[in-house]
Picture: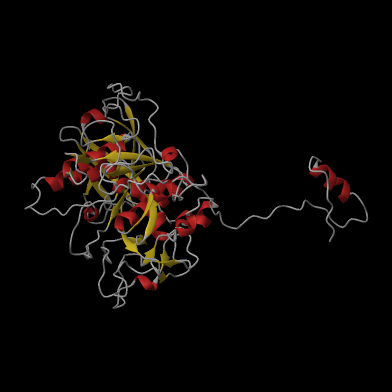
Length: 489
């Protein structure tokens, strides 16, 4: 083999063609550059982010397991995320000026900041960078510091030579539902009503992924009886909108098969519930004590595990409970534990998947994520029992490559009785929870037959104007849709 050095400004293709034409030359080709098989960002603290790429680091003076990570670097060879994908971060707010976050914060260009006018007529005044549903204004700065932790996990800027890397390079929509009620950093609160409002704003703003790194136990002594209905209705609205709702499994060590926390325990098709795993691919537990589980879990209620122990992320600055007061940019990061972190990782991976498959519904995003997990025996408990449904830990690469087998339902017949607004669909392949889509509006159904061939929906008359043809189809919980039938009343 011979290497021919040529002028840097020369036409490589022309020279290769000339060489190939020579009888004494067997072959000629450019000496292409070699790159790493996986993308490694230039962010200086990336090497400490074991959850993204774990070469077997020592973490908290303990050895970790090589490759106990979400395979982010390999996933980034496929996609790093699209800015067209919006992840709603329903939380305490976000440090909007953090240098590792600011470029990945969603901006509503139709709204003029600070003029007190709803310029885009969406019902929310000054929602330039998300909205504060607690105070009903555009102040989405971090009231506590928790939301900034989540934002860094999901979408800290990559390859900017500072700090860390997020899972995706999509846009974070801050939706704050925590209220400050005094100057002391500990003076804050959040209510179920505002949590529900945060979900409703998220879908109104067009978020395809909603991160809910929070929960509430609906105990009658703590909350009014109708609180669960308010929150459940909002969760149902996210399902109807086709968004993915990412929920934590909690940090109390509860088995969610028996102990319910919300919104995780509503069990809607678009919800994905996440437990925390550690740097050895074990369910989160106290160091050297695997008999006590810290993460919420559930072999029939929690979908998967994701990293949630000693995870490096962005830290808010200023006067808040979890803020840093340091002026040194190197101190604007912190290590955190919890299923909040785990849920954020899943939201980031969901954004990668949505970037590659932009037409995926929330339910189909969920299918790809759960079918793409890395199954780990180490996630079983000390008795060998599953702690999560899939038995696996989140894999960004696996989710991007997952190819769910989805069989669309078939519509055979439609009947509509305007007097009582009963709409019945008949067909095959329809699943429990199937929706009837009238025009573009989904309607929930109830089974009309024992064999799953008929479902009933309540559809108002104004959705089917007399004499006007309307497109009708059905959508299964797995995202599969039937053919369209035109109905004219």
